[in-house]
Length: 324
Image (cartoon, rainbow, N blue to C red; front, top):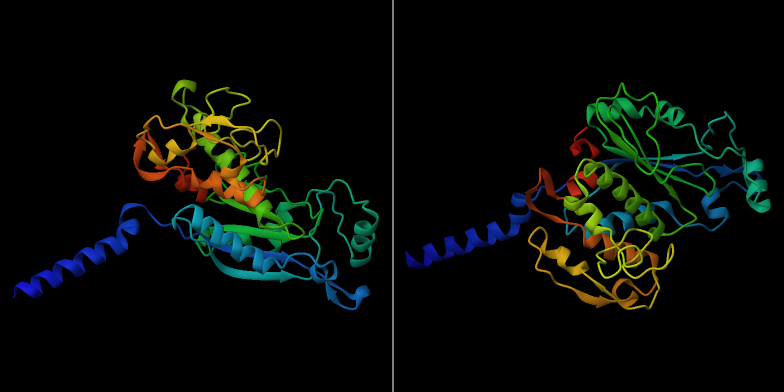
């Protein structure tokens, strides 16, 4: 009998430890519609545009991006691609212009592209029946993959209550009761640039979350401090500026500064931990490694501070968790 009780206790403990993260912090599994603009270029032997110019495979990019975000969130953000569309077309621009195979290949080879560059997001939403799918819960966000000068914002938001998300909200979408994000990825670039897109999305969302918090209590503004703007008070910096950066994209700076960056692992119970840091902390200038380092420091724990969730990933993954 004693052995049976011990076995039951051990099994109970193993079960509790195995599911503790699910019980304590909600694991987010947003459902994604992926649209890949990858035309078949008839004038170049029927090759897909991505293969014609030997750019990155968008499917591989998507899966590595998902893995990276899952890693840095410690398993809390687990994107699910529920629908994939590979389009043999070019998205229409705001002024109605649309590339053909011939005009895009000529533009790429001459580096003379159509302006204005921006796409007509409303046309994309309509063409792919996106808003009804958001409303029904079939999808939660959209990832657009395209070629250079495809005209996408890194991120943009739509729906009722949409706010600035590295770009102004998509107009004429207030009829959608749920907010949703449309990410824009360039498959000429690597996963590091995709993480930068997510980083700028994060900056916009968290700035909005803390928009009414007084400066002295604004934990987001504390998180993004770096030495150049706050000498001796560096924390984690932002997407473009590491704690010791002196200019944009200066992730390879060897200058040593004092930083509170690792005290964010104790959030919200700061211990006053500081240490000297330089670029060896975040990959010696590698864009992907810096962005993973930065995202790992973003709080993800139980409870609230001043009415704001201590798990900031709640907001970063779903703008519907952000109060209007």
